[in-house]
Amino acid sequence: MQYKATTIQEYIEQLPEDRKGAIQKLLGIIRSHIPPGFEETLSYGMIGFVVPHSLYAHGYHCEPKLPLPFVNLASQKNYIALYHSGIYADKNLYEWFVVEYPKHATSKLDMGKSCIRFKKMSDIPYDLIGDLMTKMTPQQWIALYEKNVKR
Image (cartoon, rainbow, N blue to C red):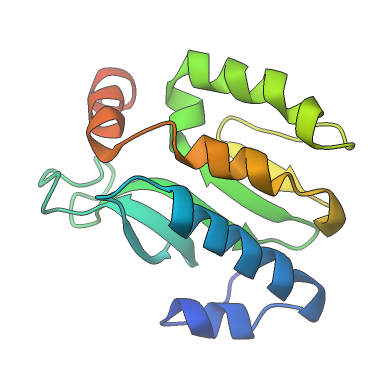
C-alpha cells in the first residue's frame, strides 16, 4: 500500500490502527539494533534504512541519485513486510534466519527473496528481528552488494 507521507511520523499516522503498534515496535527494534552508519529515511514509500552517499557515493545501481537501500519496513494490504537486502545477498544469513525463525514464532515463515511477511501482528518475532539487524554493518553490506548484486 502506498502512503503519502514526507516523514516517518506521517507514515505511521496513516496506518490502520491494528498496525501502528507493531510498526512502531519494529521500528524501535530496528533503531536500537542496526549498526551505526545506516541512515533512517522514507524510501520507496516505506520506512527505510539506507547506506548514505557519504559512505557509498555510488548509490543504488538502479538509480544512483538514491542511497543504497538495506532494510525497509512497510504496511501492505494484508501484512507487515520487512525487506532485508542482506538476507537476499548472503546465503549464510538467509539460512541462519530460516533455522532461527521457528524458535521465535508459532506461525510458518512467509518469506520471499528479501521480504519477510507478518500477517499476525501477535506473532512477530521481535527478538529475532533485533538479532537480524545486528548481523551486517554498512561496510559488510557494501561489500556484499558490490560482489553479488551490483552488475
